[in-house]
Image (cartoon, rainbow, N blue to C red; front, side, top):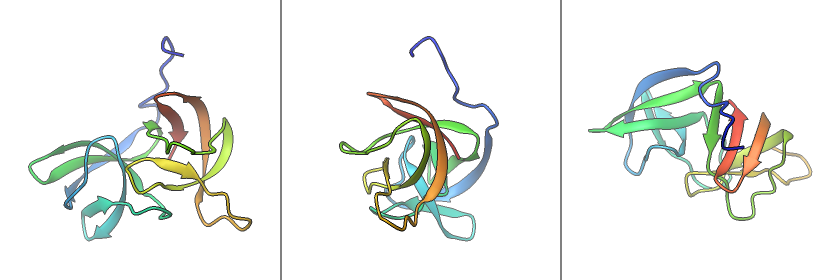
Length: 117
């Protein structure tokens, strides 16, 4: 899959204040007006931090983006209910009544998954 790239298709991104612990490449949630923070395990995420510098960051809110996967993520190609894994990545919501938001996963490999936000 290294010769194919889906990242950035339909990308919508905005600048936010970044709370402590937010790092580029990790899923984030909105924590206050114009501010994002790191997600705890089992939380819904609102985007992916693309860059973080000096307390501010660019967060992708829509489009295709590669996300980190938990070690035992359970994510497969197709529609998946996803939640934050608490380490900056995502995992499949395996509950019988999922609370995670449904995302279309178009690729999964050892480096992560490409998902539609």
